[in-house]
Amino acid sequence: MIKKKLLVITTGGTIAMKYDDEFGVIQNDELTAYLGNFPQIRDIAQIEVYEFTNIPSPYITPETMFKLARLVEDKILEYDGIIITHGTDTLEETAYFLELVVTTHKPVVFTAAMRSESELGLDGPRNIVGAVRVACSNDPRNGGVMVVMNDEINSAREVVKTDTGKTNSFVSLAYGPLGIIEPDKVIFYRDSIIQEKIPTDKIETNIDLIKCVSGMDDRYLQCSLYHGAKAIVLEAFGRGNVPPNLLPAITTAIERDVIVVIVSRTYTGRVLPEYGYEGGGKSLKKMGAILGGDLRGQKMRIKLMVLFGRYKDSSLVRKYLLNGN
Ligand code: ASP
Image (cartoon, rainbow, N blue to C red; front, side):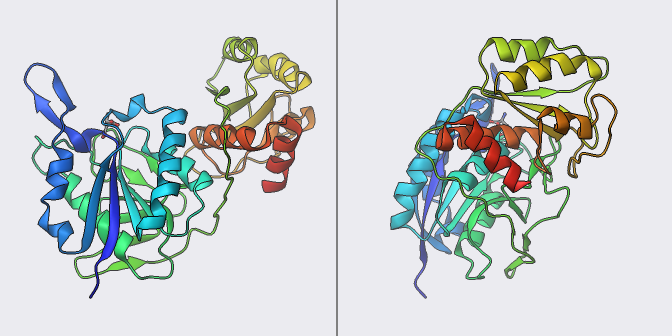
């Protein structure tokens, strides 16, 4: 059987780190060579490795994500699929960014490690083998941007890092995994129905995310407005309700044509125009805020960066969002 040809793009993260007595867990440059001599993946696929960066994922910026997306668009033409190794901290943001802007239907599989090379029970090698097996799967549901960790396949849109240290940290809390990786085969249980594509040749990074907490005032909102944010994502309470002290600044934002998107700080579920009291979702909608459906805050921020990059004009972005939710 002809083996599929895959490109592994490395970006850094714990999967490329080791414990050092003086500094703690830090990057090293062994991953590329390691992948080059990894029989469990060589047996399954033809692999080439490309080091894109070697940085901890808290250093990844939207500009880095955009460059990575362009690299994937270029390279995917030559390969049957792409694996991307990434730090776990911001993996869900990069994966979602790529899901929105990369148009290929071939598999683009993110993977990572919660444990560095120096730790007992390291998960990196197993996750890489899992990602390669998924990228090689002939299941018709295989394709698009996925995240493989801990023998599970998750959708880039749905998955979140839920735990600081456990190897089962990556979970699609609301909908469950797309599939699982068993010793004998890869099994897809479902498709990710929402396959939103927003190809763009630009992004707008001046988009803020503010989390609501009880008794807060509008300092962060004022700060965003002062710095000319094009849109502000408010991670509101429950169904999409905010403390009343935020209302004057929300009004100012809307008057200045700054898009205010309400999402929930809860872990799953949609926001809805349910509560009519001042600051409730229904009154926020009346004021002109947009309710952002079931996307979590960090992903809505990424989506707005991409939307503003593509449409530039806030009325077009507003229209897009209102149609989508
Ligand atoms: N701090 C690391 C990073 O995101 C965590 C990891 O990769 O697990 O780069």
